[in-house]
Image (cartoon, rainbow, N blue to C red; front, side):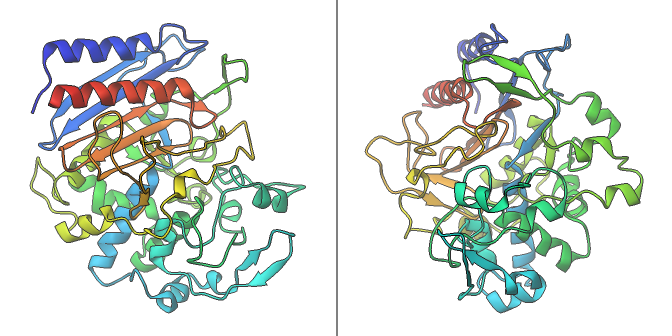
Length: 413
């Protein structure tokens, strides 16, 4: 599988054009697309590392990929499920590991609390049906956290693992911190912190060096700058949202212990490295380059199966801008003409086709600072687009993502 010189030129032109006006379009972006054989079909960067930087954005630039981390945590969980260490549907087993879940309460609409009636399972955590939410996208949870508020990206476990449920486990769908809890289950059953587990059992076997929850000095020197888009559409530089792992000394164990290994949003990565993991999913759990098997085929099939057919409009229930500096309001996570049923696999959304040319079984998700990935096992293609712009669901970024996908699928025909 390869793309023609004309297609590559057109793709490069689209990426370059997206960064021409850094103050109104994108300061910088990196895009990588891989085929089923693990080879890169397209890899290109444009613009600068940041609006106030003179250094170019390159394919070696490091991004905070935020919720793109969730797929990696699901990968880790399913490895342990294969081994019988974790169980997808045994609530007693999970709540013995995550004992804090036994006493968590449900926050009612009126601000009062009720007892949890159902056991929380690992499957619920991985599919966002456990009841946990995010304060930046749910007003009731945000209001509960006031007057002090909560920052789920502070790097402190106290900010992530303290919130109540928004509904009884299993009775609704709400995007939230459940996968942070799943990451904690990995830690408690493996005896390793989550980053160390991923390094040993996922990243190192794939030869990945530039992906970590604790960026090295070299990775920090290549870090993309963080930005925000003002309501008038202009881009401004801003402080990094996930600062703590960037300011501690990762070589000092006492300092590293201060940082919560967030299974929902803690990873920093080079886009090309992330695509190496996507290529494993394209190949049913086996690395196409080395032949190393990290997951069984049937496990990958289960991850890509729609886990929540009872919630066919999960992405259309409105993702609110409870904290508008972090996210735009979203009325549909991924619109497909005709509004077919939506789905959710084990940590990622399942789209039912789409106008870009993707198949009906595509998995995709994103990171808060506008990193977007997709994985199409049927057509053997996957990719990621990375920027560092808040709030989430930036229109300019989404337009480029759709353009890239459309060109890639047209070329693959």
